[in-house]
Image (cartoon, rainbow over all chains, first blue to last red):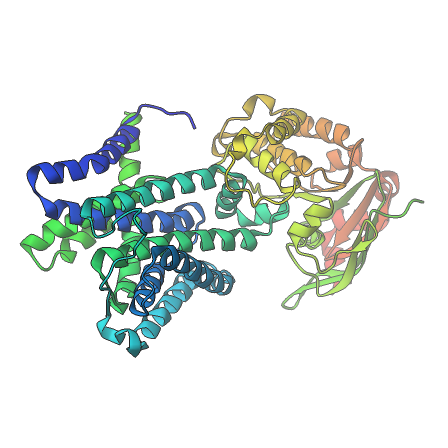
Length: 315
Length: 255
């Protein structure tokens, strides 16, 4: 990839730099709130980036992505509840269970296309939601409090706000780097080709669904990591976190930022969560403003915020 | 006579009450250019789609290179050396010409579960793409996105994509469709070159091109073969003349 100096790249670089120095600002001003807010934003940005991999690059409109946040979170929460506090066990389990869930759901859902795919992924996520609600040993509807964050020996202390923030940021940057490698690899080009023209790709020798499924699993696994981070961030996990509205929010974050743009989901998540924070200070009906805004973006700015920034370059 | 590269036997495909392919049998000999002609609605594209596996026949068999491929999906037939071009241009519009061809080459270079290296920097794939593009006269247009290519260039790119899969048999569905006079002439010249290397089944409406290129011609009407033979024999075949000159007559005869 050639690095070009244009509006969108400058904005991305500034945002990335801003995220890196944010704890410094927080320490200097004593503003702890901004650090916790942005920890949450970064975790959701990772989830949105993983959704963008299948939605933007793979053309798979999954309406059940919040399930992975829940599964990753419950893996951490349940293990902690059962006395297994080591992150070296909790996190690999979170990733493995998310991957397995994605494999099963993907294998079943990918038989369908379009609206049916959206509906079936939604249905499976709702199933996961009700299963979580039914787990009375782990709090059922009320959720499960995590009394101790994942421990990584002396390596890193997740209870330290700044250390945890940088861990999340590292996961986000690592995740985006991974996605960047993937979309430019042989595999990534095939997946994007299938989104563009499945019939053509089959005709030149690709088993489309096999590639789609692997992409679906990669995306689910990354989102499972976001789930493990989120559970540690809130010290709590409940079925509400995997409700379908949460899946919808993740989709909106991706659309705001720009589907199929590498850094778009990060921008979109910052925009969405900051706006939500801001608007909810004025009115509890903040969704009344968010809704029309989404409509405007879908109608007039298909490429989301990154698409709008790109327009400046062409004058 | 050599063993046929492609043998179609008693192929039947129905769409509701319509028999689009009616007990059709056909042989393609290695090295020949076999043209399939017929009036609109004769079932030519339906036949091609069954040969490549996009459409499954109701009954009958398709044997390619001595292997029964009737039940194989299209991606597996492609791996065996069957390539097609589409009547309605079917490319990846937001990719460049080179990307389109390189992806075809990549499909025949092992599996594509490689997640790390930059595929656009793989020299062998890019070289294969460039060679196929040069072959069809698009060498200078490699980095142009498909959506910015002219219709004629897109038709040529269709051919380059098919060639990059290193096919044994090339199924061309109306490669001249929508081309102007000069573009058509270029395509005919190109096909004359290609036929020296690869067996071709050509579906085409342009009779001048067909008679200039074909070793053998099969004529389809209402999904049935009404005649098959060398161009001279077809030219003088009475039933073919009726099919083309007096459609009415055939309709009556058929019903």
